[in-house]
Image (cartoon, rainbow, N blue to C red; front, side, top):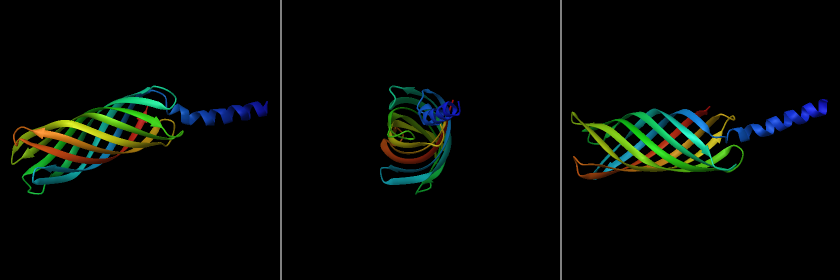
Length: 174
């Protein structure tokens, strides 16, 4: 009987990392740093935000995700004329588990950035792509690092804006 209990406990512990790969709803927080180039003007700053998503388990190793998020931004341009206020995004990703706890995924989505330019509220929007490496701390808790690149535009300036975002995320799956 003790051997059977020991075998059951070992099987349960071995199955725990696989439970993290199950599909379902998740919530998370992220802290980010960003750098933006618009023509001859550069800007940078930091952000903190929340996100929500759903993971679809495709196979034991592969998954897809749909995600939305919001971040409050604290940053400005080098001229001091524009201040970055917030960003919202929606993205879709496809990922693969490299082992029981580590995953890598690619993401494609839409981003909208709100900023203040000399007292005028403006919005810039466009595409965002990213790559993420995640590590499952427990079957439901994951930390991840995501590097993203955004290409946005703003009709007021008629200039495209390129952004680089590096974020650290914590996600809890339910």
